[in-house]
Image 1: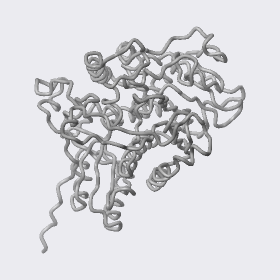
Image 2 (image 1 turned 180 degrees about the horizontal axis):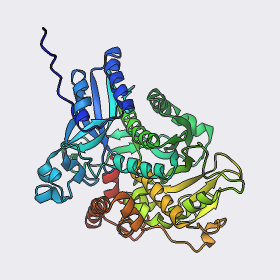
Image 3 (image 1 turned 90 degrees about the vertical axis):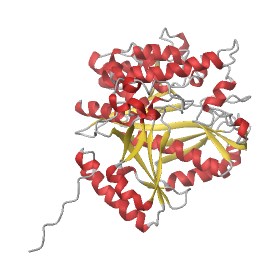
Image 4 (image 1 turned 90 degrees about the horizontal axis):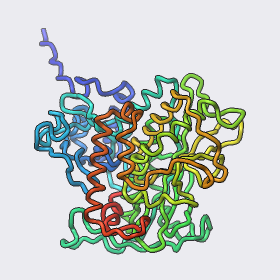
Length: 493
């Protein structure tokens, strides 16, 4: 009689039940794709607290095992501000987080979400997969921003809704003149690259300006489409070397994942072709115009698939309460929608960038814009406050938790601000420090995100602001962009 077959030990994913059946099937397809497409390496990446991708690249022969057993990373990555320096005492008891799993720079595990797998069109024989992060004992890392957003979607789902979001993202596309690679310039953070313009700007939506940028845009457009991203339009913005990409609306996690991959792809493709794409809100260069990220959003009834904001009168009662909640929590949410010091240089009165928490009907001077005519099935809200460097998981989670609180409290948004600057409304924070102060005090966000996460995130942002106040050479003009900001953000975002 033949001896019984030895059962192979359960994988990390199996032991901790980390995949759905859909992910199991997608993982098997990755195994086939590696052979079919003759891939040589696969990048395993996760989005950190700033929405920046970090990870490791594995040889194709190691991918099958890594998919099912994870890839280790150091927990110190979760302790860093935008300078990539740790701002928690990681070698003290609890690692500065009060958690044994993060003490001493211990490891956590990247667990691939196989449904996100792509073959990168700009990198030869290279695959890519987005990961979630857990501790080595299988417990979720509480500072995982993708998990934070998933929790928000779950909470929303229990209320009977899905979150639909459309992305409208502005950024700058420059010619890279000097990458500043001399050893003396490799400071921490490094000196900002030197760039020049591709257009002079100030001819909003003119075809001539678009054609000047088209050789560079074409490279980006083809790469994004090859990735399968739902690109909708490519437009010329008003500022020099400034463009806007918009995407078709997506449900749930897909919209946030699209934003993460979009930014990373654009930056990598641009750099390989002699350009620098920057999602920094307002680069420190003469005549540059600020960039924003407008988030279009609505709630979809899970059972019926109906838009819960649509109404014969323009905006449903539930939509009004949701809008009221977003406005009520706008100051605290600014820490997520506008997470850099630089982003607050954009908030100005009498401009396309809002400086107060008001709404209007198709009015581009307000924070929240109601889109759609009465009875329009596509009725939705557009939040115009965000900057393109925002972590999409936190930006979108903030909208869900604020909106749900508004629905629970039946918060009315007040009258439409048809003339925005005649309205008596709360001003948005004037600095990142003001935003984190509001965030720490916001009970709805502490309940939704968790008090530990709010304190963790605010600590990182407070450390960033403290370095800025210590080292930046500020002027009397609060809107002036400093060399400190250029060095900190231009190439990071």
